[in-house]
Figure 1 (cartoon, helix red, strand yellow):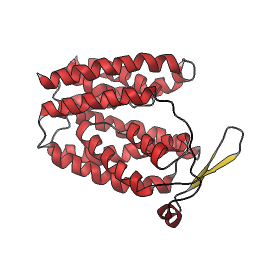
Figure 2: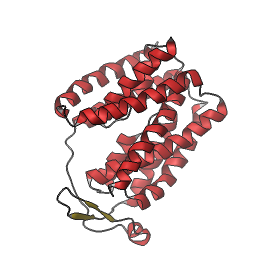
Figure 3: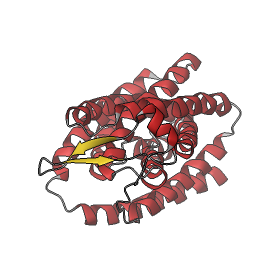
Figure 4: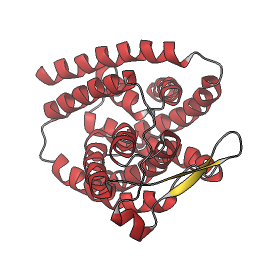
Length: 271
């Protein structure tokens, strides 16, 4: 009975996550811990498994559309995978209540970022590292015109990816919002490219973290299996519905939900 409830809950989480570009992990972990009273470490491990699955499907689509900067993604994964390993190693020494605090504040940050107006600031020239490693590229616009872009502040972007990797391992999220923010603000990538590249990266980051949690025995099949299947199905439905639904109104409603859930996570940490 619990598995069926988890399946339907995960479908709803995947649907909302795809609709808002956040992924289901940021929703399913608070739901599992607050409503199903699942140990937060088991919830984080189950979330990481689902992220690997959903990211793989979306990443293939973005690669086919030539939106993902594969060379840049592979380079930045040095930072995220290193961060994921560090995050896993320190997770054993972090008290459960601190994880609730951290997740609560991350949700608040995500809510603020969802209200932020995203604008394009394309870089005029490459950072020396980007020039040497040929990290710049081009992507197709709707009118079949190819837009070329440069990559700036590569060391800052790499450092930001390390932090995103630590958060991914600690909280069971893809940290996509941090990856996109780093590529938008620091590296001056086009929004379409940063979103597609981030989607490719979160699966690799989550896989590194999930493997470590598996070795520690934190992945519970009766939790992870229905959550992964549900989020995959929900993400597919959400991607289809996103075309028809008014994204601005959904985003406003969801910001309120994020704030409420974040406060609940912080209160649970206090208790």
